[in-house]
Image (cartoon, rainbow, N blue to C red; front, side, top):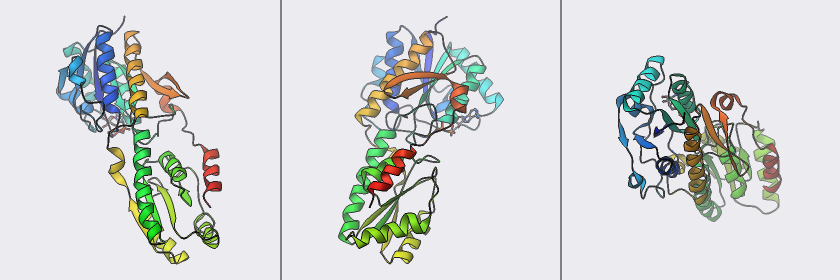
Length: 322
Ligand code: ADP
């Protein structure tokens, strides 16, 4: 039997493009003849009935904005067997038989549990970190990359004027994708990621000295959040190379801002697919981008997939940064 009344929520860390996904879910559902509810503050809203019916106009003028118009939260209360049952009861009391959950791996675990409790859920990957194994791309990643690149370009202007070294920490939790891509795009002399171990002397100091010998006077080092110790590393670079070095931790600036075209389009496609799956009566699936195709996987299978890192691109990056 196809699902006739669904809800949509955003959960975990916010990401630019979540609004485009919410809009796509609401408009697709209405176009399929379903009723659709918006749930505020993730699983918290489901537990406490913070749920509103949406119409075509409920999602007007949200796509170009960062953040999430539905708000987001982390909900320890939901993350218990009683919490999941309570959320399932709330769905039943409102006649909601399917939920689209836009978030990361943690949110997908919640979606799996809620499906087991009788409410069909579909996960849509939304996080700037690009750290979800089953998909090549997560909503928000492209905007975060472009923001980080622009910020590092700005830092480079001042780094260049003073013949300094700037060590810039970018986000990504345990995933080095933001660092790898911004490192290439900004010409970093070294890029440190959690997936690849590094040697301070050969991968940083020797590279900087070799580049200095060819006339290079200013340097960018990009460090992934998962590597950390950015301030310490910066002090050590200054001590070992004699080059004045400054640390910048970009932080939450990477989570905000108007989503790029790519984030809006991928989010729209993923949101549509999620509703299509519910319309087909399916649940416990997660939507993904593979190459340029939208696909879907069983949530448990998706959660068990090993994450891959583009080591070839990492090697190319090291060759170009001299
Ligand atoms: P993300 O979805 O970005 O990975 P979190 O890991 O914080 O973010 O998860 C978001 C919410 O999903 C949590 O606050 C919790 O309510 C729910 N959740 C996380 N892990 C689980 C789990 N193992 N089982 C059930 N629900 C979970």
